[in-house]
Amino acid sequence: MQLPCPLWRGLAELDTALEAAVATLGYGRVHAVTMTGEMVDHFPTRREGVARLVGAMRSRLGGADLRFYAGTAGFLDADGAVAAPRRVASANWMASGELVAARAADALFADIGSTTTDLVVVRGGRVRTRGEDDAERLAAGELVYTGAVRTPVMALANEVPFGGRMVPVVAEFFATAADVHRLCGRLPEGADQHPAADGGEKTEAGSARRLARMIGRDAESRPPADWRGLAQWLARAQLRRIEDACDRILSGDALPPGAPVVIAGVGRFLAADLAGRLGRPCLGFASLLPEDSADPERVSDCAPAVAVAWLARRAGD
Image (cartoon, rainbow, N blue to C red; front, side, top):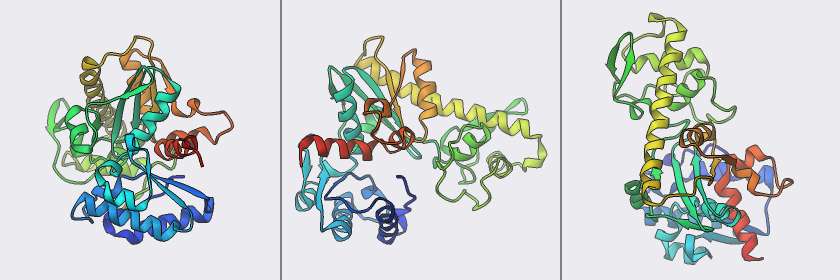
């Protein structure tokens, strides 16, 4: 399951989310853990972030067998995770990549979430990557900081076509990608878990109002169709950025023509578009698992969590 957790407000937010998860899912004998929250600005360093997140998980789930995913190092106990923060930090993409590699010999894995996009090449049943941590992956184009929900519109384009002119986009947090995709009619139900930029209603009218502010207007200044058209242009701009990153990656590590794009994340509707733009088959992440494993929509939404659990079970109890 996926729950909102504004961790930048403090670890109490994580405890609240864990309490809600346990209330629904219960406790297990084994809990496999992967994380990305260590880099929020609540923590002065990523090392401290890892240590405090490990401590929070141990406090909540300490009675179980806790295993922290560390990429190529496998699983570590809590003390080992604190001692190896670079291996544990933001390793979730590798967990998903490993599962894909075990099920598909050659593929491009594209996980488009609420905030970021992970692009992972699988060749010959192995994860092929130029970067291992966030800094290296950003530089390599394997981590693209754009997602289907929380990305500010000002990060999607510097200017937009509107009313026959190219209009600058204001550098203000007035609207997000959720507003864009809601106006396009493609935002999945339940994907937008955080408050809107203005704290207002999550409706087409609310999204149009927020989007209009991005170019210094009120929504009433133009008909609704114009704001939908602007949203569609911004959605294409976001997809172009992801496609450019794919082109960059694949130019250095080409895949066979028939290799699929395996899609995951709440923004996988964009990943499906990406597969079409690349001229490749599209394969849902959930299809790599047994048919009776879980609801396929949840599996694809929560690919890293599913993957890290699958890897832990494969490693043996």
